[in-house]
Length: 346
Image 1 (cartoon, rainbow, N blue to C red):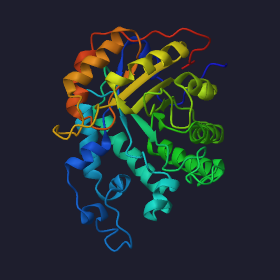
Image 2: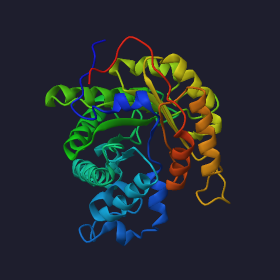
Image 3: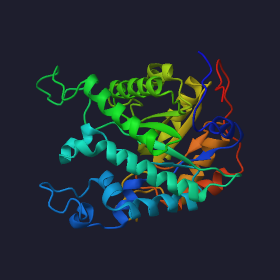
């Protein structure tokens, strides 16, 4: 494979060679802390909208940018090097559930601008901060039938997904993202549509951003929902030459270890990312999960000392408290070293 020359985020490969990089925690968990009402989600602009929008977190980048800014700044203050844009569900495919598909591009652009301003505020020459454009899986799957009685049925297509992901990618890049993250992948075909769209945009625009790809293992079978093992998943997406490949969500760090070990072995030439959720459901905890900041940080430190990871952070249930604890626990540990057949030119 040819070396990659990045037009943005050029510092990331060198930084990842030197130290473990901290990704932020959960956006949805933090939004829930604000206990926003339907009216607050709507704002003045959408006060007469014909459909309920509470729960459409991506809309808050348009109606309550102050909330999203505060969340970003909380994670940056906790030590995050990279923050994800508030765009997990900001595709036209996902926004169609709220009859807001036509707002997808605006949501992505606005979200990237909010994150860009937060990163610029906290960046220093010694600790630059990076905006990571978050690209979620959509609520539809290109590989699996939504009807148990009709295995051949599909509720989306590769082309529909490609168009949606292209629109999202373009807006995220124009809004100021330094890198892109295709995350929480439960269907490899959906991911391939995203990777195709990203590469298409790179070819058309001349931009080339670092790419992180993150799948999600849904249960103890060690497979993503569409049936692939972690190793098979990597071989399905490695053509995209991501800066990092990893796992997120679905399970806490305690249960994720064997799959991160498998991935680190399968992809020796690529950086590894890991941002688990905060463990198993626990209604007695503040976040609803059982892995406290101390537990999560201890487990991720163990991963680091095993030489498994280069990027760590948190998914569902994690907070700035988790990120601060992870940052402190990881700081003295060296990153996993890559070996293999290509390096980024930048």
